[in-house]
Image (cartoon, rainbow, N blue to C red):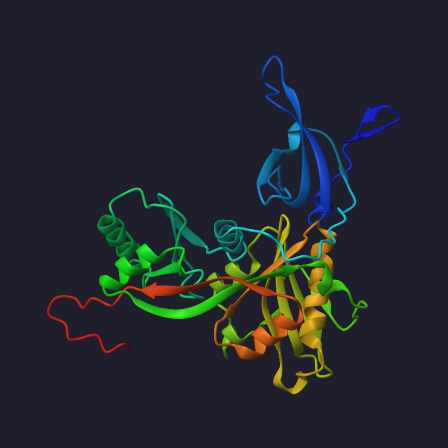
Length: 343
């Protein structure tokens, strides 16, 4: 990496470069007698409190003290035009998807991550079991039940079909109930952007009231603070809006860039504007932004029975990677209370 101009090291990166691909050289162990230089290449995802956070291509994040920088510059995006289906194992995709939809509250329990977001989406209000809990299962489930009860939301476990069959069977034997079946789909990112730029699609780093007005999870009211934290969280987040003639949103979408991955969500089109290619246009512009940040692979999650969405994603080159569902712990009435009627 070349950082010099006329033989001098220069820092040519500023907080205004957040979201761009940068190369930074820093001096580690500066207080020691023999410090050493370290080069970091990736997307500058934040610069706050004198600390830079850079997301590398593999999804790993590096934090660098501003004072330790000796050189830095913005670098062109890598040519990321791979067109075949991306190869990835289930754990990689689960980990990336979790980073792209981060809950405001979480707790580690061995290889499990407990996530809570005030009930906003099952993904952000469920246990992600990527390993063993580190304690006997019965004890782990008691801790899970207590943690979620303290937050007023049901205890759920996200289960990958086939991959976690033993855990699935054990929980069902204990009365946990299956719900919310979904599929993770993957595809090449470059073909999504193989269309002329569409000026109707506006990209922003944060969503506004117009975007939220079409988002179906907002319902008739305001999004909660927890919901806003989930939507706005992630390594590098983009929101897309297609405004209509009356100032409302005709179509929206969200994309989070994390290393080689671009995760799509909240792609919605207002009923009066369907069958005009707006969903594809939204994904195309979001893909263009993700490609510029060095991503090459795309993923999304779709409900198993959502036939229209699955047909669209088939057309765009996505294929099923793995299926998952949730198991919900049954309500246990307090002593002396009546039976749970599910309300």
